[in-house]
Amino acid sequence: MNGLGRIADLTVNFTRNGSENSTLDMSISVADIYMDKVMRYINLYLSIIVISILCIFAFATNIVNIVVLVKQKVRSCVSLCLLCLSVTDFFSTFAGLCTAPAKLMTYLEITTSPVDPYAIYFVMVYLCAIFYDTSNTLTAFLSLERCLCVSLPLKFKDIFTFRRGAGAIFGIYLLVFGLNMPHFLSSGLEWKTSEQNRTYLGLWLSSDRVAVDFYLNITVHFCLTIFNMLTVCVCTQIMLVSLNRSSKFQNRKATNRTSFSRDGPDASEETQSEELKVYSAVKDRSESGPKRKSDKVFSKDKNEKLREKDSLPLQSAKRIGSANSLRQKTVNNAISSSRNVNVMKTVILLCVICFLANLTRLTASISTYIEPKLRLGGEYSHWFRISLSIAHVFQLLNCSLNIFVYYRFNRSFRTTFHQVFCCRAAT
Image 1 (spheres, helix red, strand yellow):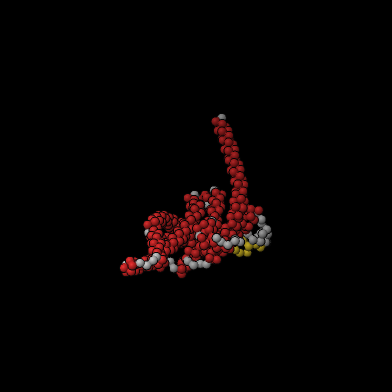
Image 2: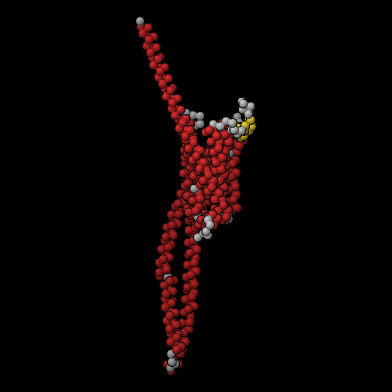
């Protein structure tokens, strides 16, 4: 009886456990189906539609930047760096735009294409990332160049000549592409034959691709990004402090100029004009009045006075000329300082945009090392794919917002833009 009771109890428990496991499996399968639908809509709207629109916009803005900067002519290290930055952003957005057809083919599940969409997506995504890393490194170099210009103004011209700046920019391109060389040696496109005896262009990966991915994630996507962000943060902080100090100095200088104009050369000009009026009145009176005996007696005194009066216009002219030259020097210094301040503001805004755009990408990269389930193929890989799409959106914003910074703080860029793209003459 006890044995039969135990068997009955085990049977009931087994039935309960089996029903609970089947219910759990059904709930997991329903959750997976629901998540697949959500990811399908996210891929459609975020990864295809939104990113394609942003790619087109960034593509157009970088073309405008290149045309205007070339029209301005490259005359300094800053203008050369901005031109190279626009060219690099152009290639990065072009590679990102080339991934849109591959994403659309994958979404529509087109299998009869002679080209594997995943292979095209793989190649173009890495090219987009390589050019974007180059753009970030160029931004870090630009911030370092402006920071040294502020902190070492006397030695800056000897350190950053135009030729050395061009060599440094070329070295940045070689550095980034050299760090990514293992990617080109371990992957590529090759012709393959499917099970249906159909030839298509597919993806080739070497046997050590896992080690190459680990190297790229550590060296390029983590260390290089951290280095660029730290450089941008430190240099931006120094430039902000120097900009605040420069604005205070300019305000103090403007106050001194105002007080000097009230008590200095302008006041002397008024007195000089009054003296000139007195002199002309005395001279007219002496020439037009009747000659008396007293005039002969005091002729020597009058001649001395007239000589003093004759030297008065020359002295006043010299004073006015020195005041005008001083005023012209002050205006030229103010124009030069305002131009330097605008260049510094441009670099600061570019650095801030670069830092905010890379923060999402760096957060997604660090989270995969903290939680391995977030990696591709893991349990929460869908969240990693969403974070990659969001990081790509910020990347495109970083590549497309530069034109607004140039237009706002670069008067020469604004004038050339109106001359090239507007029907009216630039004001």
